[in-house]
Length: 322
Ligand code: NAD
Image (cartoon, rainbow, N blue to C red; front, side, top):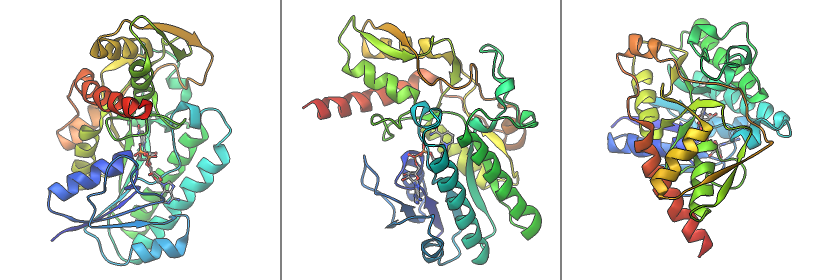
């Protein structure tokens, strides 16, 4: 039986990845600071602990797993990573996790680790025009991410690649672009735009206004979590190192995102634009490289994933209200 380790298994993408690996017949160990908030884990072994602790890292990486996925990070949506208040924690915590996990994996002679970087590492100067952002993998340098979260991702993706060059490891690096779906953070301050919009609309009555940070004309693309997991597995099992974008090319404004969710909810929703952290003006995945190297790229329309996600968040919101 094949074995896999998922670091960050108590989180959103890690939780979905565990389910997928179980469906494929893997024996899975999940590791996280906490149990999954929204679903019982399907991992065969789930260890709660802190990957900033080197000894703990060594204790959970106690065998040669066939596949290792490193998704643990101190992260959140714009309200967490763009305000500046959490910068020291974000950089220290995530960098320490990556240094520890990679060292422990290397000392166990595991040859390959998947690492989840982020589109937040792309330079801000290429993302000022909302209609024409440039997020081609080759546009990463000169580096100028607009957040410390992005700088840590850039440092860590380079870290994984150095272990490839110096120690012969075959690590794989993806740059995720705004992943969304059910069983992810939807309230509390760490949620991202699709979940926040779904929650606000689920809590709104027909004709109500919801608050939107900025003018809502900033553009993004959003990838449904199942396609993110599919891309992650394909990259990990391929001959291609990356870094490569795993994202959707269906770019929308935040105002359009609100309209799509309002349509799904069957509600008329007004927008009240207020000051708030918004990040870059435009961002979209560029999928030419993943198509070339893996012969695959995400294809599901945004609305399909939003229907499932809105339904899940609406049920959570109703349960909370009750
Ligand atoms: P998440 O916050 O739901 O999951 C991350 C998990 O890491 C959390 O469960 C958290 O408890 C765990 N963790 C944090 N510190 C830890 C520690 N010291 N020890 C053990 N576990 C710890 O986030 P997610 O959306 O599932 O993202 C997974 C990965 O993908 C992260 O590395 C994130 O930066 C990256 N990413 C996500 C997106 C996205 O849109 N969701 C976009 C780009 C990159």
